[in-house]
Image (cartoon, rainbow, N blue to C red; front, top):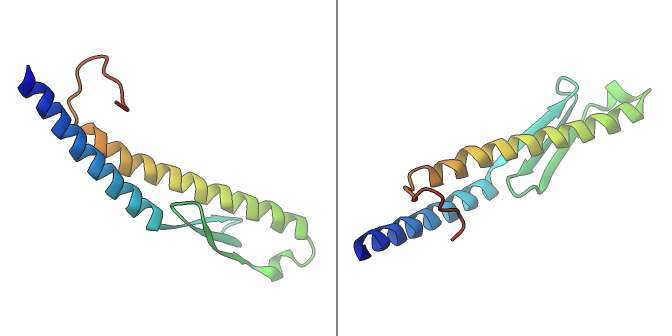
Length: 107
């Protein structure tokens, strides 16, 4: 019984280390969201820090409200891409952990 608990604790420590590493990589990643067929692009980090916004000003000279809507859509696109990247990177960390039935994370 002690051996199984020890193995489980070792697995949990490895998972915690891998989770930390994956979170650090995710925070450094830069993701670009776009809207309006590329008329507006927003680049942000995995930590949701906006790095740049590009707006094709000529396309919105007559309709600045559309530009505002597309900026919001581009930010949402980037946020959704970050969420998907987070699920794919962090979800894989816990997949190899063989927890007993009914055992929930976090500990």
